[in-house]
Length: 615
Image (cartoon, rainbow, N blue to C red; front, side, top):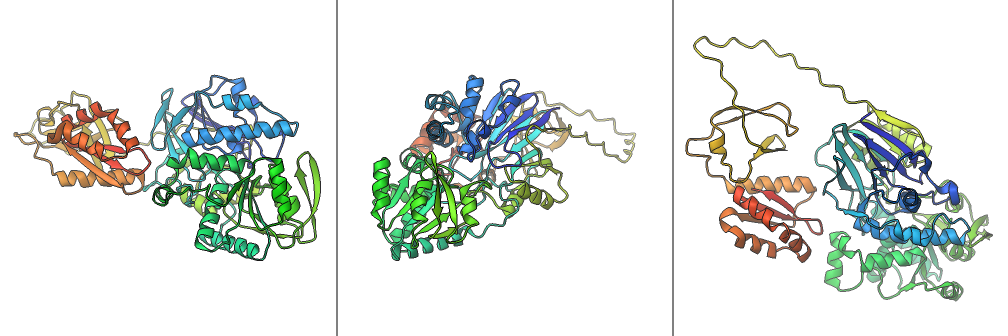
């Protein structure tokens, strides 16, 4: 079959995401993660189902359940090409190193730190909205929200179009923009979607943040301490930013904010190496305030076990952000074993809790009950005397968000993955009138080729008048590039070609360029084409650029043909340094566009790569 899907993990479960998509015989492995709540071989996806190496590994984002088994895949297939965004590659390095250290400490080592570091060598960096090809299949990364650097992948080949959304969210957070939401529906053959919260309508994030800060402030004012077990990647940085802004504005008392475990390492990476990839609002705040975004005064980074013990025994009010969001690993169980015993303190759970995790069990307990926590290599029974609250600050879309995004991608078949059975089945029932399926691990799903459309019945043609001879349809004997913008068909001619000389009046049939049998009528004058309406050209290009990127450009720089190289250099000088250097490397191509058309338009959207449009 031209298009097929096989789950090695991440089906009817949250964890070990690894999905093999095959299009035109090209094998794409989308993610290769671990089950965070399990140890050893039980945590792995079914890598044994790979009888041969994939042609490419596409990483959607850097969470452990999506990248954690990458070193083992590299051990088996060391030459497999790897594609990911720069934030994903940088963050995945810390996640894999931490996983290797934790496995060794717990006696369940799957790979060494050296293997973790080498797993990301020679990876190819990709950027959202910038397509690349793997053995003839076009791959387009699309922003997924959820986490810094997270993307989904649209695959296009002769056998159809497949879209793997990855984990996604339509809600903006301090550190992420929402997922890409196309302005018009885009049909695909196969769509793979997560269903983590397929049975849940989450409350307003803004309201949850307000209640979260209110409870933290009240607990601290009463002399208590606050523990927030959190996913170290993404969630921790969002919460830290909210806490620091709450302290700056007076909503929360100014007390030490302690960062422990992987939270500390990843927050430093956000601050020092990945700030340029954060949302524009956060970058502007950093520039205008001239202060750190995360590592501000009052933030304490736990240095070692001795430092942690001193903080635990101090008893003074503080807020602790510790890795191990489900209390199943990292330093958070150790902090919880102390804070849960304190009546005036609070433990706040802020994300997804796996069915088998201590965090899920804690939510089912009441004050006075006991909870078994994994502290180091031991299991400690702890009495729950503190306040325990849950806040829905998830980085996943809820049921409404999932259905909203899926409506933009009508598909012949939708596969629901990355969710517990109840959530997936509830979501499937909500997709009324849409073919959907919930695959199991090891279950191959193939999509039959789309049936050819039946020819339309045309009314019999009128016989030609006797006085008129049949007219021959002329053929355009030159290569052109065809582009569809809404209901307009644009034909781009090679440099130096004058359409007025190539196209005498008549009806033309365009072949190839994936436009099918399209007829257009052109009536150029004997004096050549009329002079262009430059304002109309600009308005059309601006509208197209805004629709393509889904937002208005920050700056639009037009360069017209008569302005020549000097005008182009002046326009490039008006762009930020990184974008200016990028376009200077394309200077010759931009000059060729100037010579072959009326001009070029440079659209600047912030940190994203500028969009170049011919005029």
